[in-house]
Length: 362
Image (cartoon, rainbow, N blue to C red):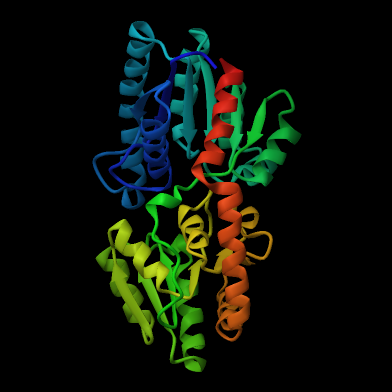
């Protein structure tokens, strides 16, 4: 490796907090503690005006256009004054790919190595439909020195459709030192952590829970995460909320304490990339119920949890009942999950994979 590698990450940086921005902070903190030989700069692409999950389309389009102009200027200035050895750019797809292409063209023109990190799990679907987003994404990948896929299906799709593109599979990391030690659950509870949105499968979860609670009234479902007041009101009008606690938004340490004291974690999303909350649940030895989207099937393989199809309440109900009624299954899957995180997802292990890619591209 070059002595004193100059690394630039182009990605969202909190606030607001989210999967990718939390990843950036994780990498930043790891480098600060362990890699004095790496000089890190960050070009922040996060929206600062409003919470991204609740912004209307027109607002996101306007923000993307303004961001594209400023990030282009910022990148050009960096290259002129103190060019990086390698740039690591994350993407969440959709409109952001247009900005990615613009920045990748600048990097290619100036012969700066560019790692393009795909942080969503819709690539197989995009390729099969051959739509505009896939064509833009294809262009961005061809401009990159290396593409990183966070799930094996994305990796295989890129290998199949773009054999000329250099692609690596690298799972997301987690820093176990930032989490509490796993404890034996103190109560019969199931926890959901995330944005309380329709596309997180919250309505299917509440539908299933009303039937589950009818059989298991000694159990509680805890919902942790931010929710718009009007959507929460509509949910309360439609569902009884019996046997349920809506905890609202919590600090990360508070959310982890709630998760650590629970028996089961559930995330019935319609779409995900590589959800950090699933990694956190696995790190705390909690069996997980989650949908067959993004990297989740990879994460929960090896009897670390149960993978269900998205968009329906019946699979959720069946999986919850199965876990509630089988304590030994919960314990076995929780332990499997904990060991898998230790072996495959710890930050020290995953960072070495990133480093190998950066070294190769320089």
